[in-house]
Image 1 (cartoon, helix red, strand yellow):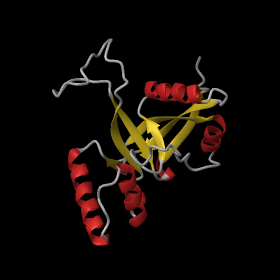
Image 2 (cartoon, rainbow, N blue to C red):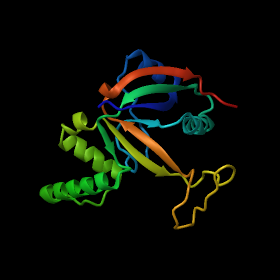
Image 3 (cartoon, one colour):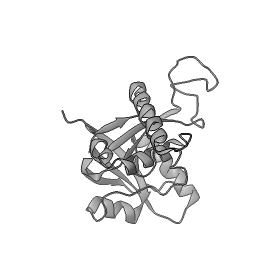
Length: 185
């Protein structure tokens, strides 16, 4: 069964236009933190509010650059769901087995693990076109409609967990469009 998910991405205007027109298949992230996150891929947020936040953050760093926001409809039938504990356990077993086989230190950041597995096993890119992960963002305000305690060890509703997707294979992108300029004052 095909599973479709609406995702959002913010980037420089020219890159967004090239992606939407099909001139480039994906806008691969060049963030220095990708080794900690999901490695090589085009990163997406699951909602527009998080995309707006990211967009504002980028604009503050580079006020002279014009940004746009892209909305895609992605087929997530080929999802590596790292929000699923059972999937993470199986991935850890695979990673440790592979590291033992090639005599590699398994203690590396998540993005490096994923890059290594996708490079070592080309079929990964066909089986897993999209990766899903929750990220913890401690700067999220704990006030308003949902309040939470960052220090609490109890289960509770939180806005600090953000859902992030990395598209590894553009074949899963069914539709793409620019939805707004993305420059905010």
